[in-house]
Each structure stands twice: as structure tokens, then as C-alpha cells.
Image (cartoon, rainbow, N blue to C red):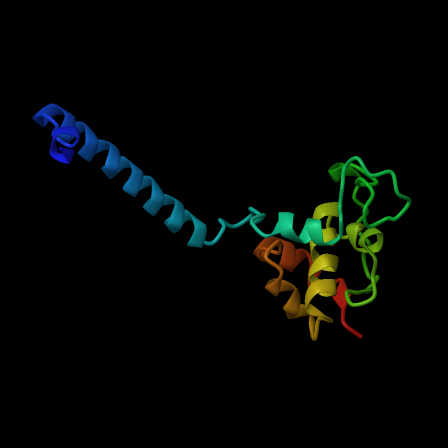
Length: 145
């Protein structure tokens, strides 16, 4: 009785094999892409959404808190402070965003709150939002003392 429901002709069997192969191929592609490192210059935002949820970040929030408010300026309005060292362990998102940009500053501060203080300047590389270009921009302007 069950054989009647599972009997397919040759064309139907080939179609099922093609569909199953495509599904397996897409699953393999997603697994491979999940483990590939980001290209230079791009930011890996896979864990960024989780870090934003930890701080209850919301675009619709009208709170006065600087960590949960919308970005205070556009990307082009960034003020690069030369010669001024910012302590990465005590700075706020607003202070750090003068060097990096709002969303990278938010990711660095959230990482610090989740994992504890940075031991040295190289520790900011542990935050997944920091790539090589961001690290080279920041390494001369941040301290941990």
C-alpha cells in the first residue's frame, strides 16, 4: 500500500534528485560562508545585532541616553582628534565616535561591557566589528590606562 504512494517515474525521480542536490548545495554554501572571515575593509555584523540587543538599542527609542540614541551625526561629520589619547576602558560611545564613527564605537563599548576591560590596545581586535583598517586608524589614539 505504501509503495503506491512512493512510486515515481524516471522523470520525477530525477527532479527529486535535482531538488535535493540543490538544497544540500545551498546548505553547504551557507555553512561555508558563515565561517569565512570578512574581506578587508568590510565589517562583520553577524554578532552586531546581538550586541545591540544587549544594550536595548532601538531606533524608535526617545530616551536621552547617549548609548541608546540615534547617531548624533552623519559619517562625514566625524571629528578626528589628533594627539589626544582616549581611554578605551572608560570612554563613552560619544567620545569614541569622534575617532571611529558611531556604530563601531557602539560595538567597542558593548564588547567592553560584555567581556570586561581591554588589557592593551591590541585587545580591540577581539571585537568582531574591528577589521585591520579600523585597528590601524585607532591604535595610535587609544590607551588602556
